[in-house]
Length: 336
Image 1: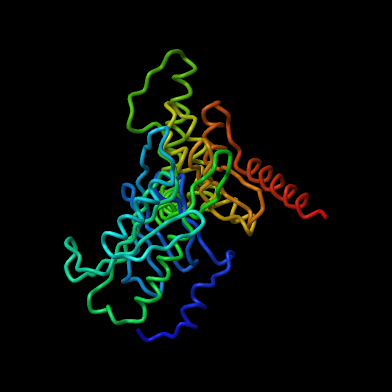
Image 2 (image 1 turned 120 degrees about the vertical axis):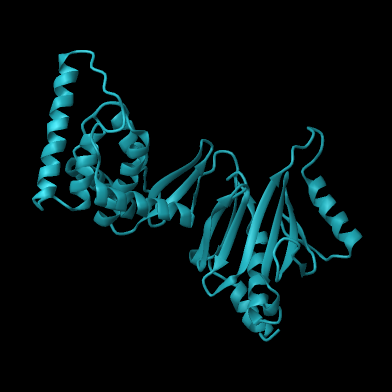
């Protein structure tokens, strides 16, 4: 279909540093793919990935976990896959961990003008369904060959997380957008003090505290009206949000936004920090990781724990302290 076998082989021999990894299914599984792929996010149990050079070719991945009886070995699913292939006349590919078979392309019943190619992969007690969908008029396009090889690579990279193992995987586009939106919202709007809830005062201190916050809100509005809203930097806005988080009922949603924005602030201070998803025995957590070193920061948890304890957060002190701690860890790891 237009490309030589040598070119396809070159495309397949991707080195690990140029690969992305995404969580699939319940997050206890992952796949690797070319760094050129993006993922909008999970819709139910299904991920949809697109390549920046071939956005019209969609690769979807759904992972189903099968509960086996105690005396049934995992290999039964792989045997089922072999039997499926035998009955339908499909070829089977065996890897050290997976067995998969690929159906022939057929017209999609749910998407007009699209062809779809489905592959079934069995690994341990999981059945992964990979599908490649593309416009009918692109059937003869050499991009189809590349996309099909991309899907095969993803299938063969499929793995299940072992107990006690930590994974650092790439974040979805939807997560990146949430981080950007949280930061933009804080820069643009700051925090509204004491709005949207009925105030209850249990003593004079509560009443005086509310009056102080109310006067401060008026003062802030006056400054904005005069065209002098104070510090407009992310650090300055974050300080206002941190101060607001101690006014009345704890606003968990705003605390999470502030944690994301604090992570953006840390990335401004230290080059080499990247957003990742940490997957371990406790589940998935958004974090910042320094390059490929085991230097990890959890900005959302850092902010939320302090808010829960009722601590006043000084953004300058917290940023400086966290930055110093990260740099110290990096230096220690760089020692021979």
